[in-house]
Image (cartoon, rainbow, N blue to C red; front, side, top):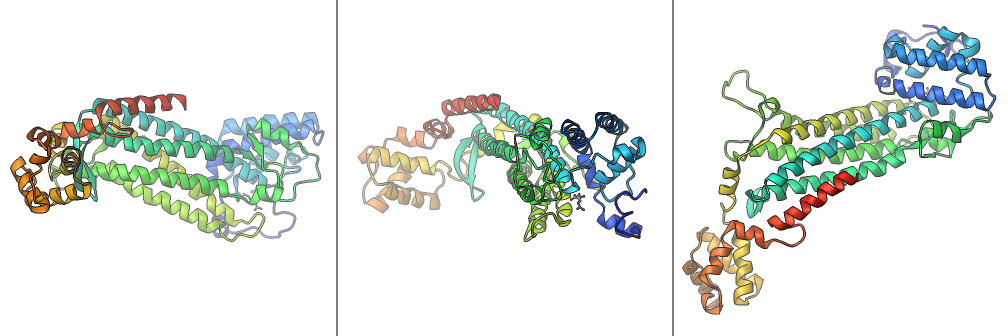
Length: 463
Ligand code: ARG
């Protein structure tokens, strides 16, 4: 390796161990393309500012384009990072008298953080696409399951009847907020640190506005110390990724539970399942389990990122290099998880009979029965809650006679005499009528679901 950095100040080269310890080359594969872009923009600006000559500029640009074409594989990986490896290769190609001018007014400190922001922008956009595909698949499945009854759960205990569409819309609502968060974070990632140099800017009269606009950034990070040392944009993005993974892990957990023999609500497509090496009958929901597991990986990445950045003094510190791979690991894992989850829902088989059958198990209509007593017999809700609670203690499928007995017990009178008819009781115990009564905004009634699904599709189209 030619020592373009170390040949001045330092007299010895690091051995392989030290080099491996200090090198960021393996994570820098993420920013190879971005680094070429940054080099191109900086070189063009240097020429426009008459800091380098036109003929040198064109040789540098040609060299950079050649390196881009040759790919990262053409670079010497025994350097401590991609920036210096790339610059070395350029100098080998066009000579130091030309290539050695590219780094004027720049440091790897502003260079690396500009590269990270460029790559992260792309990653956030791709993730938004994956999420919108997943939301679309959830909405498609919801459209087909507006009338599919299922038990809704609290504490994982049967609570009230709902529909599968209502349940799916809950997940799509959470993912829509995640997308909004990504958009907001994108705007803060999209700020240009280039021109900050090591931290104190530079005496070369750079045009920071020009490189900002060439690289498509929305605005500058003005203060040059802030520009090289801040990694808040990485922490913010990784936190959003964590939130996405927490949401996906909740969906994954349900998929695992719903595909058990005990539930039997769904069946995963074979391509998203695995089998056992010993038990020939097994069909395991490994993809969902791995999404659940990988949420831990992304949480860990955020923790590493935060811990590394904590308490660093201004401005650049090499610790920051250690933070970056955690971001890429979080990005890659989350994107993969979102894509696999989209595929799971695109191919999922829903056992509507099992869901419907379970929708009333465990007296899920008890709340509607109590509500009906309030509306028909004019008793306070708390009293109705007690009457139905007494009923539920022994009887999970009460007849009007059972109800009268419980009311006499609590109130000292029959509710049938206060206006609660047999017809009303029957209706209260019917899961479909439970659903259709819950017609206020956000409820599971088929009409309301129809409206909500339409509005979610419209939101998706506008994004
Ligand atoms: N590989 C380094 C990083 O990721 C690039 C910046 C190096 N700067 C320095 N002063 N050593 O942070």
